[in-house]
Length: 435
Image (cartoon, rainbow, N blue to C red; front, side, top):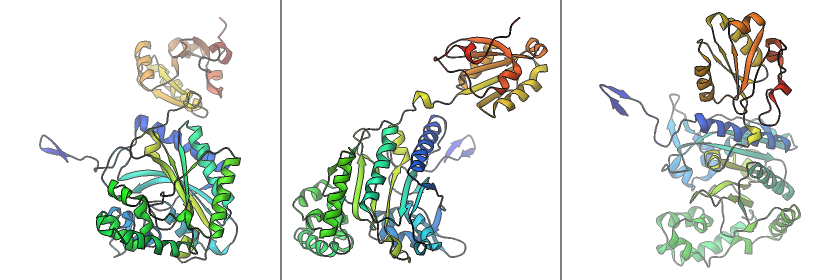
């Protein structure tokens, strides 16, 4: 909290950021277009509560995870309920799926979501304490073709925003092959347990496969000869992993197999994947997910296959530039005289039915109106003065092309498209008034 004179000013909490101005434009640009692609793949929008029971994440994410151990914003509310701000999106979607007994309904369910998540960790570039995720979840599809389908959807999203990536895939096995592999891995890790970092020493007992993904350089060196799950898969898991690679190759989706890549959440099995960017430094994962066929069962439902992913929106925004064709057209409407304000307001309200419209209520001269229009990032300036009011016309100018015309006010108000910037003459859209 900063001080200003004798009054203390309140600042945003550390690691929590306002989304405004250029950031908000990029944010909505990403969400709208990623959502449109998800819809084309058959996903519908879902929104879950920000506040959930703490037990939900302990049972799903896993008590061995860093999220539960170190990062959750959890507290006891006034009703003596143990609650927390959601640290990730999948668990809430699964909770809804079980709560509504959809695990008994049969069929396939596909949802996408976006919204704020919360983790108490050290803020840095691309990593905040309140951040936003975009994600998708599928229930009722055990086929590895669905794994490939979601991966290809993510590729479509990243391709749309012209984001370069490397796709890394792995298989984490399932409950038939993981126990034997786990025992083999623990025996190997115990041979140099004392040399591992404190976190990895704990992981040997709780979730040993996560030792392979430790970011401590010494641990990476010690585990380079550790047994890998991909070399210890059951026949079914091995066949499915090979099929996934075959499907991706057939559909021209390049990938690399990363045998040490695991997911930080306990509920994953079989397919795991990450999309990696080389443009944003150490925090290079821009989308990640995989299969979780037993998570519904862990949360009290019937065993149901599941698959999903999430991406951090703030991290992606560092890589996105708005395409010229996606830039929003803005009309600025103003009055040159006090007597014109009613006409200006009526015209602006009519124009808002088709176009984003900014209105200036204070009568001003041409120069001042154009400065305000540029500040509002308007592409079209439309002004009404005493002369225009008397003649039923409006002055219109394209700021980029500098073309201008005086036209019939009713025609301007009813037009559903504005000037096509740089592509056509202003008179193609707005015919001049014949004197």
